[in-house]
Image 1 (tube, helix red, strand yellow):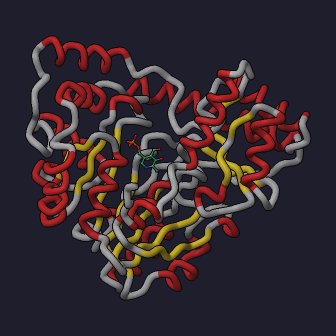
Image 2 (tube, rainbow, N blue to C red):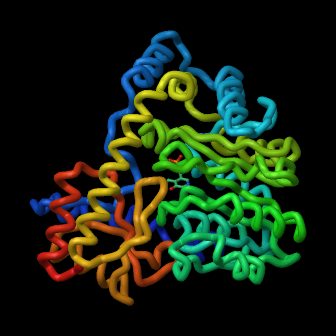
Length: 381
Ligand code: PLP
């Protein structure tokens, strides 16, 4: 028999993927499942981006690239970051097959046995798994009592951060809450990071998807440039989940260390996908605006429908998720909702916050309406 490593046996498979798999199984049995569990936009990739990918393939961009990614893409990324107020040279950027790989490489570079990592709960499921695989321990701050806002919970954050803290992960707009943290909240993070010499990951993968607010990039705050690693990707803003393209930017010493893991594992992101990424960064303003406008309408629709059933939610300012308060046993609630109402959601406990279910509103208005109606009809609201 095989003996597996501690670093893997202490980790669970991704809960969001597990629910999606169960939903697919029901569908294969003929059920009409309203899938509100998925973490991907339901729009096609913008046509010009698809064309750029095809053109790159036709032009023969099918070989290995520089490990960190082709220079033209890193230049386009540097320009995008500069627009957000972040100054990074092309040698401070690594292009990865998805933001997930970027986060994995950063955690591997910074966290080892005994190191402590602070998460803001509810937090995206893979942060915990990545930290555990690296041998780190978690210190978690619960934001469920403050409508998922960080500012009123800064005292709790202060209690969670210590000199043992190696890394703090901030994700604004947040998956799964949709919360966008205020500048005051981010300044609170900065003060603690500086005081305790903590590195901060700013996962900005939903930065382009916001409703009337402009999220500040943590790395732009005074004192944060040399301790922030900014992560972003193409999956959400440009509806490119399956292309697998993301990146991180940070201090050169981190890039050098993480770059070793990058080159010895994935080598590089896919060549022609990187070319499509340039087009996505440079020529999709209109397409992104349209998608965000659609998401905004859907958000309002779901909030209104829930209100009609006397359910109050913390209204999200970004991303395409919201947290629905459900029964204490949220796992049981989600399984029941899937089996009885054929509506798929993700239990809050997967994100460290029981008592909630995450709804993704990356679905058509008809399906959202149908889903909420069914939940109400089956007694789940
Ligand atoms: N970070 C957050 C908060 C996410 O929600 C996701 C995807 O669900 C990712 C990172 C990874 O995205 P990708 O690897 O597709 O770029």
